[in-house]
Image (tube, rainbow, N blue to C red; front, side, top):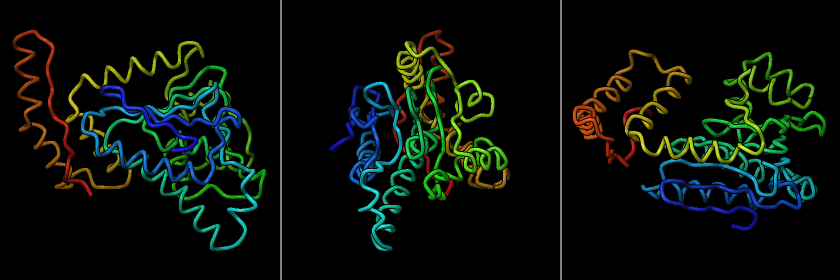
Length: 265
């Protein structure tokens, strides 16, 4: 997959941006590879948690400016390139299992957009984040802009997009841009531990919760029959029977759900 590695390790799938000489700047081919990686993950029932990371001490410095003359050379090229970005971010956001961005070093522009498409963002205390398209005369796409607004609200999103300023991890945590800030040396270990903890829990519960949270955030009514069906199905599922049995026997549960929840459009 060129400058992207897809690694399956038991219950963990790892998407690694791997162009350290360019601080993992993302070129056109890599955007397409992200979409392909997400399809491969979706096809692997044993891959329960996804970690997105960068090689060499940086998450990603953003889209690869070196190819801008080519990818923005005319309207057709621009539509193809922007479409590849939106497809990649959409595919990552649409994965039915938990996704965690492990952010160290730079997470700028397109790199930050990749992190925004994940469910959670764990960040090193020496990282820096920015959304700087205004410094180039560009715009964030609809997918990444909507994710940014959902996380930090319209006014703060405007601040970051208008100014292109760098956001330190402490501020990013305070405004909801990231979810945890950790000492740099502990970041990847903490992400691995958390991912393993999620993998040991009920995937029926986790995937259903992801769908319900996202449906409510998208404006689905809380009394929607689809939401009620999700909750009812979970109560009738094998994972809940196993959870009850394990609790009664005072043992660790052995959850088996690996499918997809199905009710919420």
